[in-house]
Image (cartoon, rainbow, N blue to C red; front, side, top):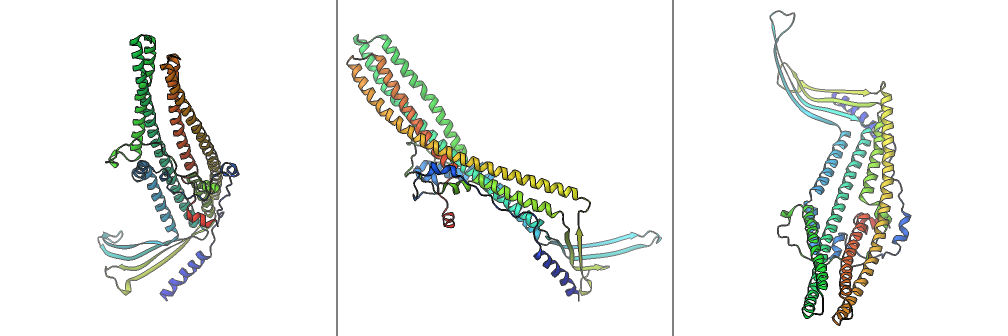
Length: 473
């Protein structure tokens, strides 16, 4: 009789919760389109196999080592990962609310006290309790399920925030690395020009000693030589600053105990840029995905707020042993209790409606944020592709300028040696070649940075994961 009485209300409660529905809107992700990218990516190659770890395509072991150290040791990335772990732990905690909860209790109480109205007689009493307490809030209208949806979406948003930090760090390391190597190249260009100017000065000194040049010519030569020489310390200071930044991003020099800086040429792609399904790549961008998950969470919380309009049914129970006057437990001290309760905020409905309005407003704000993040993503992609295209064109033109300036200097040197032109003409040719070399290195630096921005704009990869590609067919 006892077991059947216990099973009947539990069965009824289980039937009720299984047949219940969740109030509030069911979330549907809004459609995001970017027709603006069609013209920019129409000429991009397709079907080119690319390493998903995009930095490896530059075939630069030093860059690879720095990025691997950053991914492993960077504190900002570790903090973002910890936030993800915390968010998923919160999700697990929230999802457990839909299940019964309880604890095991063992207690003993002994009393020896006077009883009012009984004279000097003292009452001795003992009691003991051993069993399981049960608490269960039945999710009749989906409040707990909507809360679980919101917690899961929050955790997924945190994961996308971590991915965004990761992509930004990769871009920062790559840009700082190429900055360091570009400064190496600029320093090398300055030193080569310094060597050339020193040789020219020796010629002028010899001509001065022979009476074929003036002291003014030598002073002009010295002024240009010292100007080039003075530019080198500033470039070296900038290079050191860039290298210090790289070590900080990688977690400190202790994380790279055997590290040796190597001067290498600026990294270049081993194959052409190929963009696969640009619109879907932008949809997968971490900041867009984060905003979409925040919208999903805000939508679910509308259901949480609306569920407060309806009754909340909870059950408290106990199953175990209860002994009065003794501490022994046997079949005679077995006990159970079941106490359902129903709660309805009948006198607080204005507050409930206000919370529903708050949830709806936050959902609208989350939708607007998603739309803004999408517009920003499209604009970033457009700008990155345009900058990369123009910086490539500029690099090609500056390379032609360097070639022409080199030939002009060679011709000017021959003419000056023959006495056909003045020293100022020779110095001007030397300055033009130095400036052309320096501008070319800076343009190549900008081209690399623009390419890094392309990868960043498309979420860190120009190719969808294989699983996404299969799902699209």
